[in-house]
Image (cartoon, rainbow, N blue to C red; front, side, top):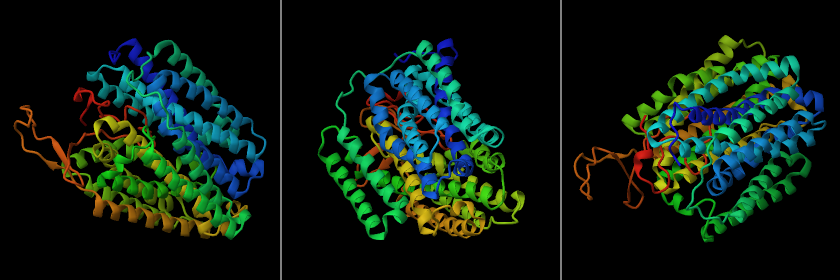
Length: 523
């Protein structure tokens, strides 16, 4: 039942469980990039193994996050969330105890499976538990507290890596996980979709994982495989991806409904997401290594270097969403990536002798300003382009595309810029490759802006007055689809960078399936 009051004891516990669970994943994501150099030194890892430490998690998460949301709908959102937290916590312990790079990579893949279960549940528990009038405020509270967790991540993670051990960056999840499970089991009500179909697209999930995994393996292990074998393995991955598309078109219960991509707006927004988030993942991967390898930063300072992005998102992301609501998403989704691209160009100049205040801060600040323009409009556009009953699936698809973009960029770019072996620990070799990588990221971001300008369309405003059913339209936004279809645009509040909106309930402001629109919120 959706009858929990925000200010009640139960309401506070629901928020606490959701924030603690999603905060674990946020902290872990912040820490891993900061810890890579120390992990490589202690475990004797190669660059390819460091890539897998990052990408193993992303691979499992991107492949299974849609399935995780569906499991919550069918078997209980709290139950699947708790299973995900327990799984993530045990995998974190395995990460902290790993003695070889291979052990750590396997543990990170298992972490990604747990993350795919807990991430959609953290938001869907809130959306399903609270009464409609309180959902907007509850989600705002969740995102605000989550933003604080994201801001603290660089401090806590960097301090643990620098003054304790990189292992504690994973082991800190044990008490957090235990507290989350205790609160959820005792105080969070169970909810599920009683109308949900209990059939699963297992074939689709397996094919998606194999396609991403095989392609990523070819990109990361190209040096070991040799050019011919790497190309062959990559083509196998692409072929599996093509089979996935065919299966999704033919199955009666697809993980990704093909009808969603009939909307040019939806397809364009996801194409832009792939380009932009590929660049975002690569920028932070290369920048963190550059700061430690070339500039000699410790893990704490390297983690804090990107703090301006979090601060800017907390201060201005909501205003970026309001701007897009007034003028339409096309211009913010065009200008935002271009501004991020300018930030990447500025960051390409970071090298030996650069100071933080003149070398890093200007670029990372411009980069963050670009994100404040594009994140909220992107989320709202993806949701508005899909029917209400597919709101959760649409947000989940966009989340998976974003993770896949980061995954493939981190896998491919080191090879493209000529890095291999232990080059990440050699300042001269890494610095030259770093500059090239940043220029490529700037190009990807510019391409994302071009896609938005050419393909994204602003919703048109319908005049106020009675609609076809006799009700009042009151100037709601109407989006004209690719073949003249008309659908109501859902106005979605800004979502902090890094948060997942996957799961059946979708992002803040979306209605659940075919229920009345009283569950919607406005920014």
